[in-house]
Amino acid sequence: MVSFDARAVLARLAALRSADAPTHGGHVLSYVYDSGVAEIDELAAEAMRLVQPVNGLDPTTFTSVAVMEREVIGFARELLHGGDDVVGSVTSGGTESCLLAVKTAREAWRAAGGEGRARLLAPVTVHAAFQKAAEYFDLALDLVPVDPETGVIDPDRLLDRLGPDVALVVVSAPSYPFGTLDPVEVVAAACEEAGVALHVDGCIGGWILPFWRGADGDALPLWDFRVPGVTSISADLHKFGYAPKGASVLLQRGRDRQRLQYFATTGWPGYPVVNPTLLGSKSAAALAASWAITQALGARGLAELGESCLRSTAAIADLIGDIEGLRVLGTPTGPLLAVTSDDSVSADRRVDPHHWADRARLRGWHLQLQPGLTQEDGTHLPHTTHLTITPVTGSRLDELEAALRASADEVRGVPPVDPSGLLGALPPGLADGPLDSDTAAAVLQAVGIGGGGDGRLPDEQAPLLALIEALPRPLTERLLVELLARIVEPV
Ligand SMILES: *Cc1c(COP(=O)(O)O)cnc(C)c1O
Image (cartoon, rainbow, N blue to C red):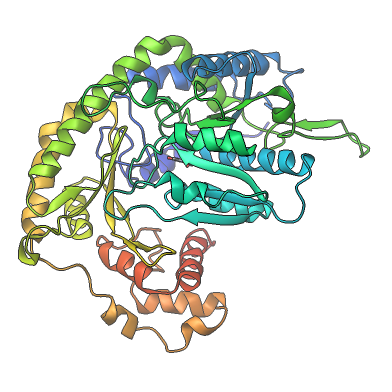
């Protein structure tokens, strides 16, 4: 009989967890989606416990998996107005849903006679998961610039690039960086006419936009399966479905098309393999939690939680508008917004959004810093700070407002970080060739970000972001890989 000290192990885990950013209470305005309702978390935990030993690989052996998945897909399909021809899968998250949407589109394009390398066409604001998908599945990535003032895509600029090699167009509902609801109807009409598949990335919006209204209180423009020409939609349960991480839905229009998502083989001496998703053996925990939450809340419960997000988002957007030196970028749709510096006031009254976020962090509020980006046409998207608003935010609005105002007051007039000092600390010739791990680690040390042991970044992230913006992309990407890889190396 094995014996062990479970208490000591769990005590250590609890201690480690206490060093994490707080996952409840609304102090982290990205990554975590807190309903603010403890009963929802308890329900999810109990559901996960019930299926803990199950292997989601085989829904014919573990039939509970089939029932839960079918019912979650049915719920999502109704919410997104799909007809009988809309079918789907529960995946492990937004990235997997996006990867599978791209894989399916590539197979469909090939089946229709496409030859050579397929192209994926999208606004530059499309989630990085599609860059990953293009890399994994070898599609050419064609990213169309958006208006730097508003983050909005001019549909004609996108549609001008349609061609026989385009296997998939992707638009967002809404985009993660700026919360922009892309013009789904216009793009869908053109895609349908051209016979090109269109994915709507509703990873962050899919479970909340059905309950959202425009700034004027009007219904949103259509973006779901009511729009002919939309071939697939992704919607993450582990965002505004309030489920623990590890669950998303990918819905596809057309059974024949969706079957191309699958991998199947009987060509080995083991069991016949039939996988709708990327993984083989997989947990059913997040599926069970998602199923339990959707069963318990229904559309009514989701609508109520969405309403709270709508009110808080409007309040925060008003607040940002009222803080001298900051502005919300564009007109976001949904519970997220990007804050940038208001260049209409003089430089000594401007607030750099990254300094602002660093100050807010010192007050216990974690906002997400987003780097600026020079687009293909030479225009520059400003650097911003991202806030995702969740139902729990509503109970903390006064506290949040005070922190955001005080943080802005502290850094008003402070110019953005000038990276030249940091760049001066780098050895010359770095960008000329591939870096080995040891050199990359030394560079990280030289600029003061790496080797912390606890995996924590410095409190001030503005300098790190300035460096990300200033260095050539391949170099930055290599350095960040090193940073993350070193964090999990055994010491
Ligand atoms: C979160 C998100 C994704 C990727 O989802 P993960 O769950 O983080 O893998 C894709 N698209 C959008 C718009 C998102 O917000």
